[in-house]
Image (cartoon, rainbow, N blue to C red; front, side):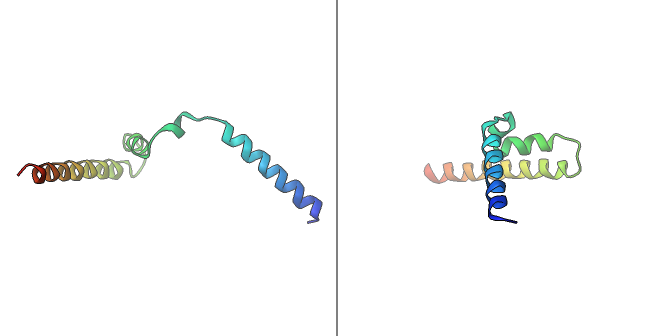
Length: 74
């Protein structure tokens, strides 16, 4: 590829990248937790495993919170 072709390709790539960042998508404002929760409620394979993982993480966080509060007030 000639120098002119490389320059044209780079300019095209940069312009496409600039266009893609201007578009706002409502899904991009979701947190990872919210995305995982939506996935857990779907019917796709592996959704049950995601739901189980979220429940386990919630349980562990609640347990750690109870332990922390117990250590603060003996």
